[in-house]
Image 1 (cartoon, one colour):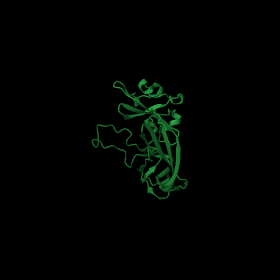
Image 2 (tube, one colour; image 1 turned 60 degrees about the horizontal axis):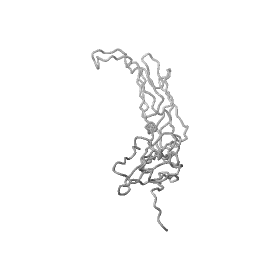
Image 3 (cartoon, one colour; image 1 turned 90 degrees about the horizontal axis):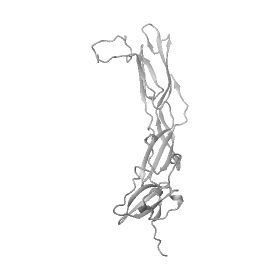
Length: 264
């Protein structure tokens, strides 16, 4: 069978169900490679020295130039991938699930203080007492479903596409009016406490006397953690460039179904 002389070929992509195409063109001394790294360059916008190498059907002329590499003596191969809309590049071409053990942190759901008559916790100077009340979901290691979504794009995803990984915890502690305590390494919706146990009278000449104290001594605040309860979060979100194509694998952890809470 006679060989077919063509500068066109099909190219595999990270999506096994999708293909790109390549064109090999002879390059002269003054021929310039299109700046496809900084701009979107479609086949139909390529310079003549590339387009003259092969006739391309209309269905492929809207493909985007994603890669260029040396082919042979004074020849260069250009790879073109399917041009996507934002919705298409943010829709996974493959989804898979796996279950494995994962630690989920303690969640402080509610925290409040009650005045009482029986000294179960601590006693104020005026004779009344303060009882600490809370509702907490205990942190533990649970069987957890992980979802892996795979995406493909002919250009990089914007930076704001990548969400922060892993829940960030905080240690809440307080000491006021005879009540002292803490809830270590937890997620919480934000806590505020009166000033720590003192008369409130400032001793001048100690510390940073040139800086106004203002309301710093009036209250102790712990801003809400980025996650305030168990929720779906990205464990890994790492895009990588594979032969000019941007491949993204997003792994998300789904919280276990555990409604058990304890109050104190």
